[in-house]
Amino acid sequence: MNHPLLKVTDLRVNFGAQAAVRDMNFELFAGETLGIVGESGSGKSTLARAILRLLRSAQGSVEFGGLDLVSCTASQLRPHRRDLQIVFQDPQASLNPRMTVGEALAEPLKIFEPGLKPLEQQQRIGAILERVGLAAAMAARYPHEFSGGQCQRIGIARAMILKPKLLVCDEPVSSLDVSIQGQIINLLLDLQRDTAMAMLFISHNLAVVRQLSHRVLVMYAGRPVELGARDSLFAAPLHPYTQALLSAARSALPSALRTAASSEIPAAADPESAGCAFRGRCPIALPICASRVPPLSEVSPGHWAACHRSHEGNIPLSFPA
Image (cartoon, rainbow, N blue to C red; front, side, top):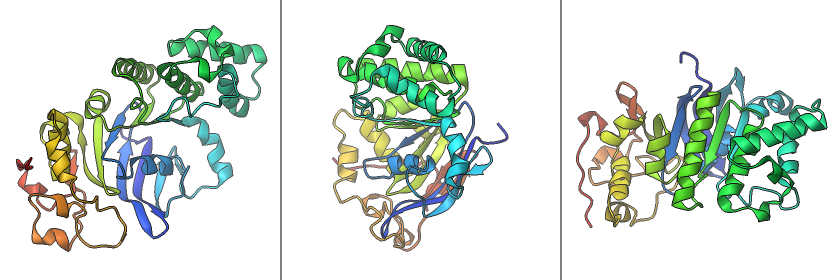
């Protein structure tokens, strides 16, 4: 655990003059899952795509296997692509409807292992389909012949067939029935146990994040606001936004988050604006919150928060109904 598999430093992603992600710093180790949570528009998917260099970053670095994925050339990045895989939110939209499942799974093998003979390809495809809970004979079928849960298993099989070191899961269960969600989560846990791969797991579902993750990163308006071990963060969240999220998750009627979200999300329309982006929705804001962005600071060992009052510990908040 001394050397991180992935190290993100001062990462920033701009869309025109708007900063979608900024001040992003964290490490990820082999065999570890980092859950990433935050409401829509907080920059979670943008962060994931920037790490995989599916989007260009404006500044910062993403070190993976000794290579900076932000500044390296396309030819330097290409051999590392097999170790960086993603599972998308919509399982059916992520599959080509004109390709059979076998053809879709053969594509990464053709690109990264061109020396494989056709029989070896078929064996690899059959083995990975069976590993994700499908029959090898299903390789001859097309995506429209499968349910959403089965399509997501196919998406996971496509990502795992190259045995990646890092798997990014971008809301992989949000479009699935609750019973199917549990099956997919258990499958991901089994695959991680067998391969020791690292995972970045993006989700709105805090219960799922708590089940899967070793650590949790909370994002708001493109910035990290809290980072800590799962149990520590869920038991004693330090940032008011994290407290609002957890309060909403525990409530049958999420009045806490609804009230906190009653105003416009202060998305980073002005990337250089001073102050905490959450101050307009925060019940414990101080005058300094309007003039200075709170840095992400280590409040206790391994538990970081970006709040001017985080040194006061866990302050119980009251969000009016």
